Length: 372
Image 1 (cartoon, rainbow, N blue to C red):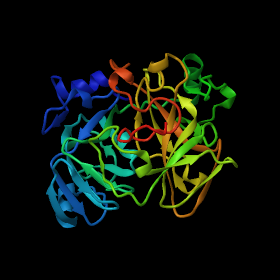
Image 2: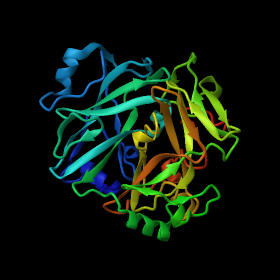
Image 3: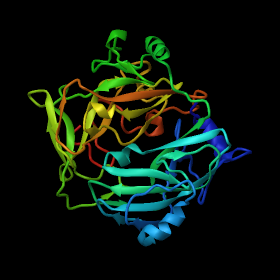
C-alpha cells in the first residue's frame, strides 16, 4: 500500500530514517502521498539515454557516455532534444519490504519535458527496488521548449509503497464510487454504475473535444524564449502555445512530433483513503501516448468540494509515427486507484498550494492563465 504524508515524514525525520539528503529536506517537499526530489549542482550531458545493467552503476555509465559536464547554477539552460543526467540531492536506504515509483511533477510534464528516475543496477526507469541503498539520478530531455533550471528544483516525485500493493478490485471500486463518488460528469453528477468502464486496476477515462470553446493547446515549434522553471505566472501563453478550439466534427488529428495538452471528459475525485495515477491506455488502442506526468494525491478533486463534482484530469498527448484521429468521448487512458496505508494527515487542497483543480485543460503554472 501507499505511504501517506505522516509515514513519509517518519522516513525522513523519525528514529529509523530511510530517506536522506545533501541539503535540508523542506516540509514543502512532503506531499500527501509522495516526496518531491530535488536537483543537485552538477549536470552531465550524455550521448544518449540509457538504462544500467544489473551489475552497472550510473556513475560507471556516465564515465563512458558523458560528452561534457558542468555546474548547475540558477538559470542554467537545457537545450531541446538533448539528454542530461543530474544527480539528486536525496538518497535512500530502504528496508527490504519498501520500494518506490517516480513520476514527473505535473508542471514539468506540461512543458513537454521527459523526466525519468535512474538507480544503480536497476534496469528500469522510475523505479526504486525494495531494499535499495544509494544515490538517485534524474534523466531530463526537454522535448518542446528550451528551459532554465536551478539547483534545488523539484522536477519529479516518488511514491513509497510497502510490499503489499494497494490496487483495488472492480467490485471495491464500484462500491467506493457508490459510497463516496469517484467519477463525475461535467455537470458534477456522479456517473451511474452502467456508465463507468472499469478495466484491470482502474477506471477508463475518455477525451473531451466538445465541452468548451478551447479544448486544448498545441506547443509551438518556433518559440524564441526559454522557460525559467523557477518562475510562476510569468509567460504569455501565445508565445509558446496555440489554442485548439472545439472541432466542428468532434474529432482532432494528432500530428507526429507535436505536443498537446488535452483533458478528460470525466471529472475525477480521490477520497482521502485513495491515491492514483494515470496509465496510458493500451497501445493497441492507437499510436499515441496520452500521459507523461503527475501522481494524483488523496483529496484531489474531493477536498475542495466535499464529495462534490471532482476535477478534470489534464493529459499530455503525443502521436507516435503516424497521424492519429481522436474523437470526442473516445477512451484515452486509465485512472488507476490505489489504497493508502493510512489516511494522510494532509490532503490535496487549496491550503496546500493546489494549482491544477477545476475544469478543462490547464497550462503549467509558469504561464499566465489568460486562456482559462
